[in-house]
Length: 634
Ligand SMILES: C[S@@+](CC[C@H](N)C(=O)[O-])C[C@H]1O[C@@H](n2cnc3c(N)ncnc32)[C@H](O)[C@@H]1O
Image 1 (cartoon, protein in one colour):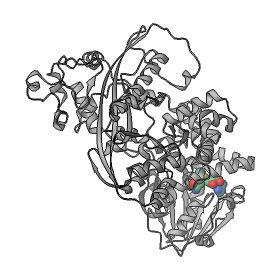
Image 2 (cartoon, helix red, strand yellow):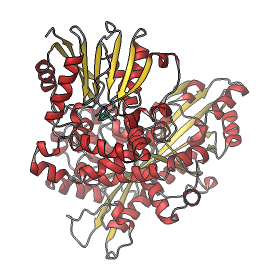
Image 3 (cartoon, protein in one colour):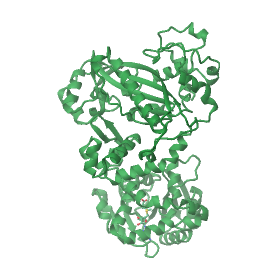
Image 4 (spheres, protein in one colour):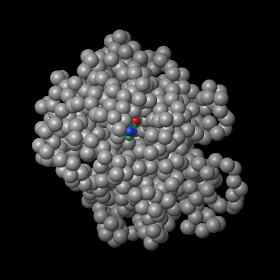
């Protein structure tokens, strides 16, 4: 890490963020920190009046949050993480502390207090270094996973040593003079509800703010700059000669950590430590020594292999998918959209599920960033509202349902497919599709919902990958619910589009139509592209079709298209490809279930072999590659 080597110091450690706040998660992951999220269960119930200052309250809350997580993880696995980070953000007007509003009236009271004035935003941060005295030895790396839901017997003599470093950051914010109407409009947007002080500066709330003095990210929820300085102070204790130059009550200058490298750190004496930044004291009050747990980490950790966080996450990846699928299937996100936030017991009642398991499911969903937990209970995060609520414009519910019901099963046969070769696997999905579609209406609808969800994400990219305005008519073969047809009609105002698909699909396509002017230029024609004559068109489109069929079927289809296409007409193919350098995980995994993926070059050759020339290739968003060829004269 060139910008900030101190973040790199945590790279080989198991770091846990004891906060469900997606904003904190984003700030830290953008800074390159790798960490797990284990939201704290510490109830924010400290007696505010017993603290001399608002920031002392924020620091103590942050510390209790982090210690609760460290203790719980240690108890569960007898191996605490190496570092737990806790944070608490509050807004203060003078000595009065404003936390998260409990309802709209409360939000109104808070925002009125802030109106036209300056206030302070404090974030208290605690960095807890843990040192498990683990009877089973340092190699034991049990993790908090779904499998640990079941009660397990643990040895009880493991001890947890913690060393806490804590600090706070203050930022001054001034609100403009705001009208009642504007305040209520903002409150009714729903944004204030889970935010300290009742506003979020990073979104709509930014419009209320006249100026900010100090660290902006501190107002968002985490003072990254001070955090890095604190890490620098802990991990790079200055050499004795530097100590003479550092004023004891000052925060290390930014370049103190920016310019440090590992070799510089190696030359320093871990037994020496600078005094803390503002509030930056260790719990034991001994400012001249690096924390004992930290000292052990500095001296011992580098000789141990890096903690394989990414690998362990991969091993648990299927559980995360199942959690998502289960929550979708239970319609959890729909219930929270309509009635949330809700406490776990209320969710269980509404879903008619087991209370204990539901609470665990909610907790994992929060850790996965699908839910947010506030004092009022669980609510959907932005991504869940956008993509996991079933009736949303951008809903991926259908895809989750289909992956759970079908793709899951296909992947259980991956070993067989790999052993027996591509020819055995290519075509599995195409054949399964035919079988499924002929089975029953509900399965067909489920299949269509999945294709519809995914196509909504990609249709625009496919329609605009090339300029198709020279074509007057198009036929989308296997066009399913007509999402791509709609996008083509929208993009090219004179284009007439035919969606050609199996009768069981076209029969149900009406339920997916949204109306609008372009619909007049779209028609659905039932038929089988292997048997029936293809509708006439200037341009044929195959989107996500070829990958599902074995070579003999694929050539049959391409040759039928080639015979129907007049010279000068076109063929547009959109497929996931996996072989490009740097292709991300998602398309690679998707093509895996479809048999052996073809590269863009293979697609080019396929089209050329079937009489198309001037074949061009383009990317369409993150997921697909699009190939366009022009039919040559026979
Ligand atoms: C993987 S989906 C692709 C859907 C859509 N083109 C997309 O990009 O999302 C395959 C489509 O081909 C259709 N299909 C499968 N066999 C077919 C056949 N023999 N004739 C016509 N359509 C067929 C399926 O009904 C389904 O809509």
